[in-house]
Image 1 (tube, rainbow, N blue to C red):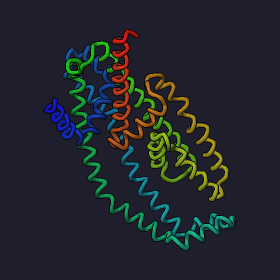
Image 2 (tube, helix red, strand yellow; image 1 turned 45 degrees about the vertical axis):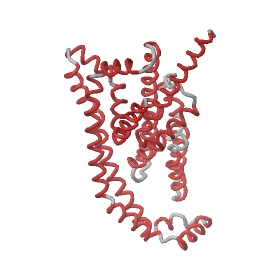
Image 3 (cartoon, helix red, strand yellow; image 1 turned 45 degrees about the horizontal axis):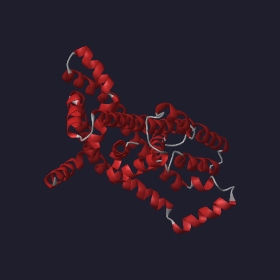
Image 4 (cartoon, rainbow, N blue to C red; image 1 turned 30 degrees about the horizontal axis):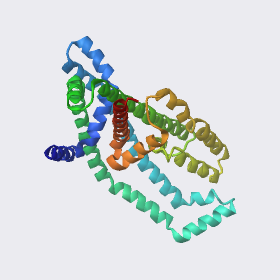
Length: 332
């Protein structure tokens, strides 16, 4: 038992650098397992079906991600240049000349902060970060390649993997089926409930930024989508300061439109879409779901969005199994 525990610990240490590709490959394998099954019936072989499925998934995932990343970098640079130009020209001061309180606040800020120097430092930092960003993108590309490499085997050999897990786990067939069903439901609920709803909020917020003519709508749309993933935050962290900026800039009509859109559309899309996409598939209390998401992010990094809820769901199933077995022994 001791040697087995040591072996498991060493295996985890070897696997830890690949947690993100493994988590993403696992989620994609669960989500696209029905596609793999249909392709197997038509093509007659799991290998060819898995290869075709991976190619289709790569097109669905990689092309949009590449497009968004390229435009995100471009808009980030343009947004920083626009901020620097407005600060250097003094346009932001002229926009608040009719509001004495804001003028007094701006004068205090200028006494303690060199805004032109800070904006130039920001632009310089963006240029200096281009090299590390390219290297990071190269590492992410390697991670994507590894994800699809693992995904091919997860799809092709999924039956053998599930059978091996059934043989290794000290659970009955019914208990393992319940465990697999819970993991499947958790991944579907996490992806469709959390990521899809967050993407919808970011898309709606970015579209409104674009329609109102605000700078870098794609950038802020992506930021709103990322913030919407974390339960304690949300898209309001971005659109609420934008409303204040429009009010200061004496664009009250646009400020009212953005505020109403943020509260009535972006803010309520979660309540409308989440029940439709999730329903009762995520068998976790709201507090437990919050802990699994935030704690998973803190423990596993980005892959914690999937691993956190999955680990907690598996643990809950195991605890329920122990409770049921104890009840059966007592004859309850």
